[in-house]
Length: 266
Image 1: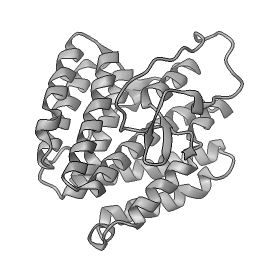
Image 2 (image 1 turned 30 degrees about the vertical axis):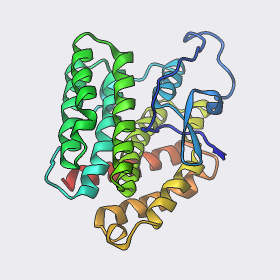
Image 3 (image 1 turned 180 degrees about the vertical axis):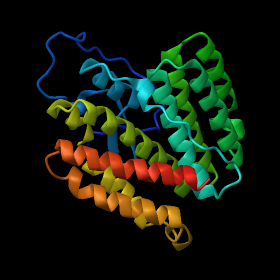
């Protein structure tokens, strides 16, 4: 079993609690993400996204509104693109929660439902997307995090039942790309070794590379998938060495370009 440090994972069933010292108190000299609440993705153990955001909040005061983007939603595109976009949209939902942006969260809920409908798993997430909208009106941010986590876990399980594991991996990858873009943006704006530790993720990067490499030829030959594979190959050496401000900036550029490609392919 591989334990890795990861800035984003979108398939999780439960938000667990963990205590950190208040901002301004003495912080640990090193972030040990292996001790955060986590879940298992095949043979990879990863912390929950909300807990990674908690660490970032404790190490500073990110301006989450600056990190928000408006993805282009088109439910008539290829299933490959829709799967990647679905993951990216859920990642956007976590950022919207951090920014306490009620209207953006509600839009994410509607977008998740629309994209889920396009890939045949609408019924799986209908109740959760309704709850996302309802909880946004009451500013129940913790509850929304749980619904976002649960919605993607439900989508994954539904795809597995439909024997569509390849698309499930692409949803996960789309969320990871957008989440990594956000985290690298935050880290780059206020770099510190502790923050850079959040990008120590070579195990997960290898996991995604292997999943893409073993996909059927019809998927590997997809232009968007091919572009993402090349992007991951470029990021790989940056992750396997000391993560400097320069490497953080480049990882942000590459993931940003790939997220833009996911949206522009719609």
